[in-house]
Image 1 (cartoon, rainbow, N blue to C red):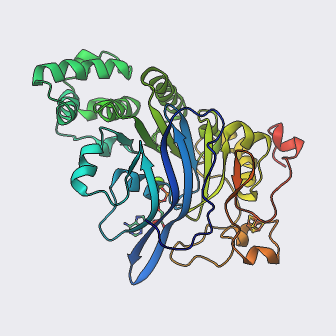
Image 2 (image 1 turned 180 degrees about the vertical axis):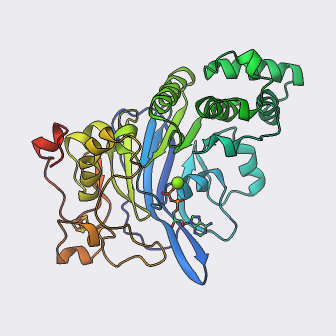
Image 3 (image 1 turned 135 degrees about the vertical axis):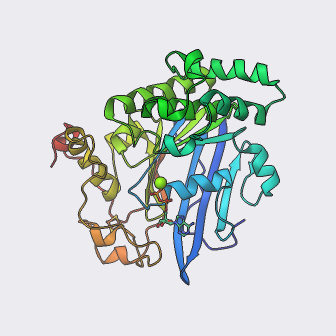
Length: 350
Ligand SMILES: Nc1ncnc2c1ncn2[C@@H]1O[C@H](COP(=O)(O)OP(=O)(O)O)[C@@H](O)[C@H]1O
Ligand code: SF4
Ligand SMILES: [Mg+2]
């Protein structure tokens, strides 16, 4: 779709551990107009996802994670300008008519958001909400759909599923509500589930339980998952591959294992350096990196991380291309880091 020149190299290799390719996003760019200014929300994002894999998309707030996910769901406002490509199971999603997109939403790709309370209808019993979602995707009768709804509630390990079926969202805890939201997302038997900060609003114990549930669902249903998070430590312990985003761009992309062993991009390195801090303070939502990410309506020229980067030189006035510098390892940086210092590897902040 894109006729523009791109500084993002086309991805030619899938990361290690490849199954069949399900999704390939290439040089995705999304712009909005806000108050006469152009907001570059997604500014060059490329990755691949294989069937049954978990990919983490990591970045600070405002880095374009949610907008990129909503693009795949066809959930952007009409004013959004989208270029690039997103091929899902052989079909180009960008530019699909809304009618076709609606057919795929939930059936092929489903999304779970941060706040389970807002995803549920407070005035409707949860069983009815799941039943409705199942009937939207199938020709099952009301009774059959209700039976399937109870099965789904059991699949997501909602305690006392038969009884909870008749309860309203406010009668459930936050973790239980998120299980219900996941059950609704599973109603159309999607091949890809996008979990957008799906555990961020939950306490640490519940967060771990929901992550375990997602992992179990991936294994039992063969579903691929995109795990969107600002928490690199959490995501990398569940994901096979990780895309790190900064200012709307992919800045590092490789397997979780490789990322921890040979992190290259200074921004990712800073995120990793912040992990021990997150472990001490599980509710600290943002890693501590001095400075602020740039305003997407006024991106600086050159490398967007430059104002915060300790390794920056004059060369960084040119934007570094996002390329596969080592097999299976892409990054965008003129001065990639050497391997992490032993202190950071051992979990001590350097
Ligand atoms: N509908 C919109 N109109 C204008 N700007 C938007 C819109 N939606 C998101 N943005 C902007 O796009 C940028 C990326 O947002 P988002 O993808 O939500 O970030 P993240 O999920 O990484 O926190 C932010 O600067 C946000 O303000
Ligand atoms: S390109 Fe330069 S400014 Fe950007 S991350 Fe690399 S060293 Fe830092
Ligand atoms: Mg978001």
